[in-house]
Length: 171
Image (cartoon, rainbow, N blue to C red; front, side, top):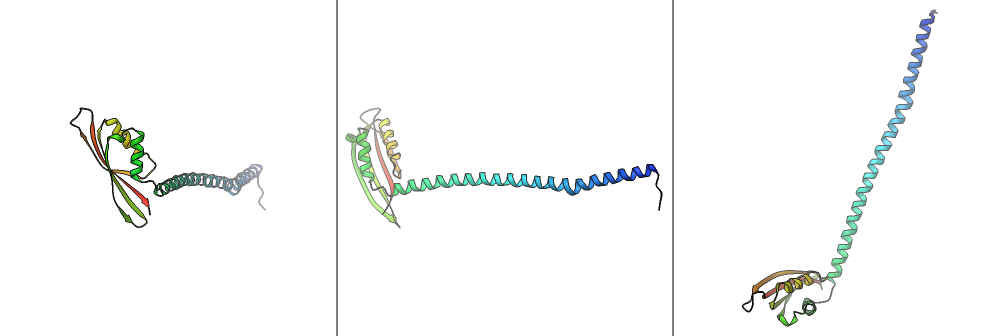
């Protein structure tokens, strides 16, 4: 056998300790750190997926609410003419209404399109705009397809207004 000096023995012992430390580092510490990093990455990815799902669920709830609102508006049995009469009465412009005319309905599938014409004479612009606002915010699916406002001959601040309202209802 080879006899080693005291110095060589210490160098071999130091080399053994260094190799041991390297083995412990690469076989035990590094896999634990990699596992912890992968768990943290997976946790962050899961949290981002959860926030994305939460946003999708909020969008779904909004769409569901809009769908139910539109369905209730489609099933509304009140006519446009009665709504025009109610809003004109509430704004005290019923005396300025010259005519209301219902147009023939167009049926397509399970829905039908309803139209009504109305004409007001001798109104100020605020009354016309308030009437339009009340019609648009009545809770029915109503669209103004025609609007014509003319200044009257009688006065400077009075106008004649002709409007056509369209609505869709279920049959």
